[in-house]
Image 1 (cartoon, rainbow, N blue to C red):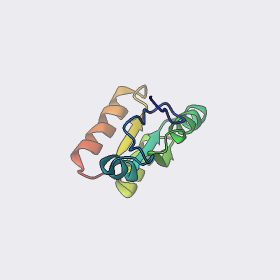
Image 2: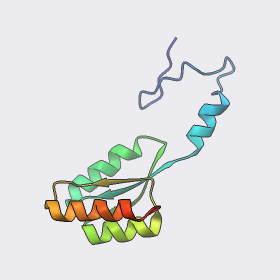
Image 3: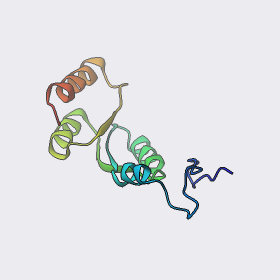
Length: 105
């Protein structure tokens, strides 16, 4: 019988005692750190609320413009940067170039 958690993940791999296999526990222990880069406050807030529903995701910062996103990414070193690519192309392309060229940023 499949058992789904509150966000719809399948836990049918659980041991009979209800515990998860050790590999799943190790994977679950590491949160994915996310930086949201979006100039519209309502969209940033909505994105953050969606991400908060997943216990394996942690929003570490929100940026309202490109400069702030690059600065926060360099400072906080998130695992993922959600970047609003509808910004003018030159700005988005420059930001992606900065993220790629600075390992760990």
